[in-house]
Image (tube, rainbow, N blue to C red):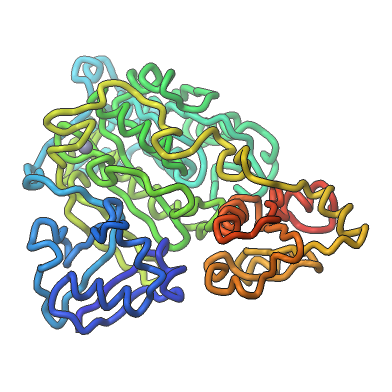
Length: 491
Ligand SMILES: [Zn+2]
């Protein structure tokens, strides 16, 4: 029977099943069998009018079914159908083999290696794909890393070691203890220090020949073009949708290649977006998923090693672009499932209707990306103004006075092993709708989660279901731990 593969982000609706064998003759029937088996999935795959949502797409093998016969595409007995968040349709893929080099030839003329550098890079120099000229290309290259976190750490370390001459770093964050599990450029002693400072020290220690240009700022619509302009390649190590669209659009507008990577739990993706030669990120994801559908690393977690695997794919692609060697990952999306240790490759096509790189683009300037992604201000998902809420201190005081409040913890069971409130009852967020009969409107309900985002969604859900007295615990159990009970660990 054909198999349907389900991405991690949708597995909360399939009882964590990663794949399902279905008795189906077409792609459409397969999806119908899937949502019959897991009814909760329907709302995530189909819009209200019954069409497949535009940020969801189906691949048969490595082909987008839109380029086959859509939902009528016939399936063989061994067919493998993969659900992949949106890839827009379009014309044929760019298959030209491109000896692309991003390096300015004039700049290259003026670059030579010192004797010391010749010794340092000798294992490169004897490779026919690199040689003295390739190493000079690396030295003359200017690469911008957006973020020095999970992906940015291995990228910075390896690109510096390989001899990339100029590395730009954009980051405003400070090293946090919870970063150390994966952001290997930062050490325990760096906790509390700016990530930029910490990263520059490590890069210089590995290779003092590298020139580092730090940008201690967030990338914004106002500064992005100015920051990106002087670099040959931009490497996207961001962890949020607004910055990812910003990086993409700025790269398209400036004609720069954008080396993309993203990670979630045990899964990763990588590609090279370069609008002159293939699709861009918007051709892949025309629109962001609604806020809350795809959790971030902070919400969903990530295996500490995974950014190493994906970041080094990005580093490899970056070096290939600089050398003009091999086949770049343009027009191809690499998917990694580390639990199965399975790499898959999907074809990506340029979307002629892409709003930024298509035939009649409608985006000619950087826009407001927070608004585009449905996020009103940075704290919007956790602190919406119209949401009834209660602070941790208030909750404690009222519980201590013996007020009959129902505290509803909507986190996953394994999170309760990290921290919990003895007063709370527990219903994981995905089960609240079907177990709502366990709640009563007789008492006030305070909904809580880790940091206030999921509980805000459930507070709204309960309001919509008619609960009059429901409040969100601001900042979740982590805020409670910091403000009320220091013995509770923050995670
Ligand atoms: Zn595009």
